[in-house]
Image (cartoon, rainbow over all chains, first blue to last red):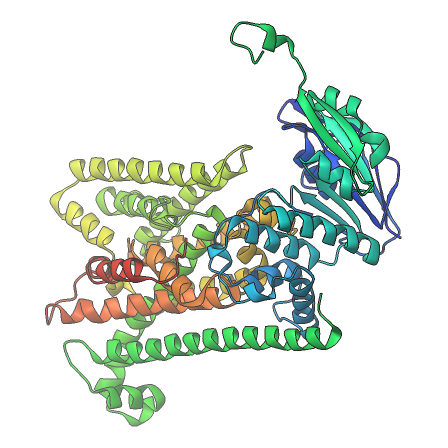
Length: 261
Length: 356
C-alpha cells in the first residue's frame, strides 16, 4: 500500500518563505485526508511543493508503489478554454510523456473515469463551453485518468452545487477505500472534513498546526485559533460529528472604531 | 457506476466518438493538401506565358516529354517561386501557431513579436548603407543581415523569457515594443538613405517571392523539415499548454524548458523565412487561427493543418499577385493582407466555436 511522508518541507517565493517545517507521519493509502487552513495559509503551495513544481528544502517520501509517476495533482485553476472535446481533454492528461498513437487501453481508461465520475454524457461537448462545476469534474477526471496512487486535489468542490459536492466527496472517500489511494483534498468546509475525511492536516501561515485523525485534529479550539471562529462540534442525529458555528471570534481590530464589533 | 457490460458499451461509444473525430480531421487534412496541390498547379500555370493545367501536370510528371521552353519556364523559373510560397507560408504559419501556443496569446506571431521588424532593419542596413554584419556571405548580404537581426530579436525575447517572474504577456509587450523600435530605426535609415536605397528598402519590406532561388528554397525547406518532427514530438505537451499553465504543469509538462525549446525552433523558422522573402505579416497570425477553427487544438492534427493552411494562403496569395494586374507581380505581403484579412474577418465573425 502506498505511503506518503513529508519531512521538514519548505518553499520560498523570491525571498519570502511561504512554507517551512512541514512534516507528517506516514499517510497511508485507503484514506481521504482533508487539508485545512485559512486563505493564504499555503495549501496550494504545499500541493505544488509535494508534486515537485516548487523547489525547496525537505523531502517527500513515497513508498509502496513502483509507479514512475505515483502522484497526480488537480490544481484549483480550471484552466483556459481551448477547442477540445471533453474526451480529448481527459485523454490529453493520460497521454503526456507517451507516444503520439492512442492505444485501446487509453480509451478504456478514459471511459472508466467518465463512468466513475458519471460524466459520460459530456464526452463530446467542447470542454471550453462547460460550466465551472462541470469543468471541475473534468479536472478531477484528468487527475484520475493518470492512475495515481496519491491524489492531490486543490478545492475540488469549490464550483460544485450542494449535491455534487456531496457526490464528489462520497466518491473520493469510496475511491480511496476501494483502490487504496491516498487522496489529499484541500477544503474550506470544515463540516465536510469532519464528515468525509479519515484524517486532517491543518496549516496556517505556511506551518503545520496539526496532522492526525480528523476527530483529534478538528476541534473547537483549533477552529478558534486557526479560523478565528467560535464553534461547537456535536454529533448530528445520525451520530456523525458536525460543526456548529456560533460567531466570529473577537479580534483586537474589531474593538477599534469601525471594527466589526 | 455502471456494470461491466455497460462499461464495455461505453468504451465502445468513446472509441467510436474518437474515431469519428480523427477521421473528420484526417479528411480535412487531405482536403487541405488537395487544395494545396491544385493551388500549386494554378500558380505554376500563371505568368506572362499562360499554360493549361493539363500542360502543367504533364510537365511536372513527365518533364522530359514536354516542350523545352515549357520545361524551363516551369521547372527553372516558376517552380522555386511557387514552392517558396508553400515553404515560407508553412514556416510562418507554424511559427505563429507555436508562438500563440507557448505564450497563450492569440496575437503572437513573428510579426507582432518583432522578428519580422528586426529582419527588416537588418535588410535595410544592407540595402541603404551596405552594412554587412557577417562578411563571409557577400552574395547573400541582405538575407544574412535580415536573418541575423531576426535571430538577435528572437534571442532578446528568449533572454527576457529566462528572467524570473516574466509572464507571456510581458513577452508579447516586449515584442510590440521591439516592433516600434525597429520601425523607428527603419524610418531613420530611410531619412538618411538615397532615393534608390529607400525604394529598395520599401520594396523589401513589402515581401516578395520573386527573390526565391533553388538554394534559398532548399535552405528554408531544410529548416522546416527539421523543425516539424521536433515540434510534433512535443505534440501532447504543446496541446496541454493550451489548457493554461496550471493545468499543463499538473499533467507533468515542464513549461519553462518547453517554452524555450519551442521559442528557439520557431525563431529559426521565422527568421529564415522573412530573411529570404521580406515581411509577410499576415500568414503567421491567420494561418494558425484558420487551422484551429478547422481542426481544434490537438497538435497531432493542428501542426500539419497549420503548415498546410499557411502554405495554401501564401500560394493563393501568389496566384492573386499575378492576376490582379496582368503582367505585374504585386508584392505578396500586400496581396495576402488585402485578400486575406477580409476572409479572416468573415471567418472570425461567423465562427460557431470560439477558438480563444
